[in-house]
Length: 520
Ligand code: HEM
Image (cartoon, rainbow, N blue to C red; front, top):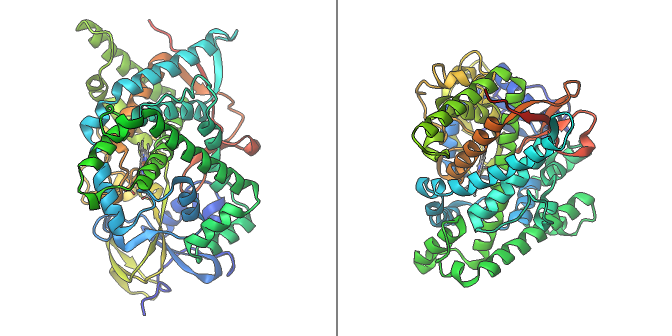
């Protein structure tokens, strides 16, 4: 019988809780970084009641788990899966095996390179909208600057972006039009997954042994505030999906429509043979997933990037210099606007973007369960407690695994001794630039968008959107830490979000001071 008893890892605090509190309560990815430093890319830790679990950041193992063996690992059971089902239905994120393969094939054409690039004008107009709103706030302030809660603004902007780019629909979130969806999604990730108390950790851990269906049923009924919020968000996303279809009406269903993701998806679906098609229910679920997966992830990544700019004024100035030099070149050739090609040609911007994605992956952990015994190849030999050294690891069926995106992205073996330092330079001439032995991920050998057939389908969409926003924000505004005396923490496992110490009740918060960036 295969066992993980011989694999080294941290000491559990108790039989009941294992290492779960260290994993979930010590700040986003802190345990991942600590365990990786101490034990390397494969770590055994204890779940509740003595259960052996694994945390993996070894490149070869991650490649194997996300490519060749991807369908031998399902998304883990329990709390997270049940919540996903309620929020997003049975679309791509929840699908497994053949159903996933079928859904992914129909969805892919809507997320290609040219399709994502064609959305640039949409992103540009929303980023200009955001700029003018911050400008108005600055103009009306006597101090010549204003404090913005960055994630709140950015998530409104990215909701508008996903509305228009994916559904040709205007949510009006930036203009504060009342949006049921925005209200329902506000702080939802923090409410559902954030800052877990010890009893919650125990309950969530136990829920992993239960099948999803009864849990979904239970969560639909339980009277707690958290589940009420979940139900409200689910209802809002169902209603929004239905409204989008209704308003776009026949054009969408006939696949005429526009360049938006949904029109392309409906078109691709219509051209599939009957058996391969998405059902109407699946199409609705895909819409809800795109709404959810496509806006908080992007706004969260942008939030942390602005935070790094605020903390590192030299990096900010260098980035702005590059943007302005490009702007001057655009003017010199008689044009007035940045094209996407201009943006993509900026080396320092590209380096900054990759470093932001490396340092602050919005999804820091991915959770899986092995559905059969497996043998996983490793990049580095693993020294077992018994003294044996192995080049591959036998994993028993039923093992819960955390794929640590965050720890992989800061692996010193890959990124160099300064992997814990935010340094865009590494993409210009340092470790980031070097070809890695093992190819993982879809951008810059990072795990941020995951890898293989379950990698983020929206990565090109997100890259186009984030670059567009960064150029406009940095070109127009000087960004600084608003309250140096306050501590901003990274919280969460699964999705990372900022909170201010002592102000956790305020929800997701990262206050930044913005003022107009002077021109010579
Ligand atoms: C910076 C922004 C983003 C990040 C960091 C990100 C990250 C990820 C990651 C890590 C996964 C894999 C999750 C897992 O397997 O457990 C994923 C999957 C997915 N993402 Fe993204 N994402 C981003 C933006 C987007 C956007 C803009 C969209 C849609 C417009 C999107 C749609 C999806 C979908 C549908 C999946 C499921 C793919 C599958 O299972 O086949 N994401 N994303």
